[in-house]
Image (cartoon, rainbow over all chains, first blue to last red):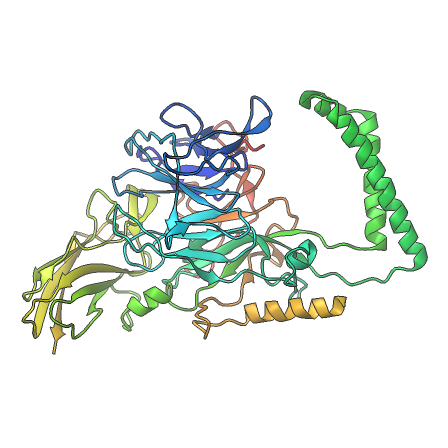
Length: 469
Length: 109
């Protein structure tokens, strides 16, 4: 259900994509005048994009349809409730990651182009660590970002039992592979009894009486919330808070039981009436005096029961988990320990191994610091994508093209583009020769730096780095 | 018995909230902070069920907004009232409207 800002059809307008419990996914198309009302995203056969299980609006019931790729099991109950758009196969268009209520993640490939997306009629499981991704308890809601700053998109995922799952992309551009998950944040365990719904959702409060953390149904979003150069996490979630325990007298206990009986009888009566009606008849019924009377009685009973034996209210709130480390542990390990002047553009080059053995593959990490208020452009940007260029290889064999983060979609006065802000790392793999002792590597970062309204001329920032004994 | 359960819950959450930067468990996050509007938690009324937050410039005004999806298919947005570079200061969430003037409404079930 998390809204995602994308340029769905590469027309230069900002669009939003989000899935709902209907089991389908929607496009909220942006125009020069604002957003159109949402429409379903359809596949190449003009059918709704789904995983399997979905609410059929015409028939007014849940149904399932087999959209599994050949060779995969058809999970007829798997029900899309979230989506995340990303260029999975690095072909320049937006593919779709689908989050299932049952906890799995699926991939639906865009077989068209970025201007004219055409989605496959099939979805396939996304694997991590050799197995299908499965979020404990379900309600998988994925988001994509380059969490470890290696230039590849990673997947973060929340779920019904809470916690933040991190799936690190260990593949390469166009061929993502994911390691088994790590927990960035552990779920709230409550009283530890999974069968005790209230106990597992009841969290302590702070001095102001506010819940100190979310318990269930975590919907997550990575963002540099405090503009300090690292990624924080927003978590929408649910919880109960502990209420004062009240010991009922025998008389109060008897009254509560009587009220509960009355409530059950009223519910049974209304359910009986509902079961004999068509949906439109029930809507008419809700306008009748009989239904209003039922509502009033239920409210009175509920109010009195709350007076006698207060039950906690469900809270639906949003928490900030402020990152006090680097972007992530992996990024922390990769980032050089250099302090950049916050007002200046600067780079720092460092090998992951200072004295490699003959024949060893090493990675050159060039960390780029972009001053606050400015951005440079990611690899997905058509004009002036940032590049890492080696001009003197020192006898080392240069590997595939350097990885550059794709950038985040932005719409500014200068038009739609993919920005890189803060601090990021570009990487170039190199292999040292058999007779290697030492070498000096030279190169530069080619970039164009802009603010919201204007750009500086394209520029080069040179670096020189030694490697070996 | 209930007191024991409460103490256990408090203990678990205190452990969870006592994490500091890259502690011995590898946790890199500070204790969670509730998003607030003035002195009250955002969405204290619970109008937005299953809040699903995101941050982006939804209205093309050059500033990022907090955009929130809900289980019933609505979308809300909060303007940032702060012009400084630190934490945003959010205004009350308001439903995002379409070009026809009505709130965005995604079908559900």
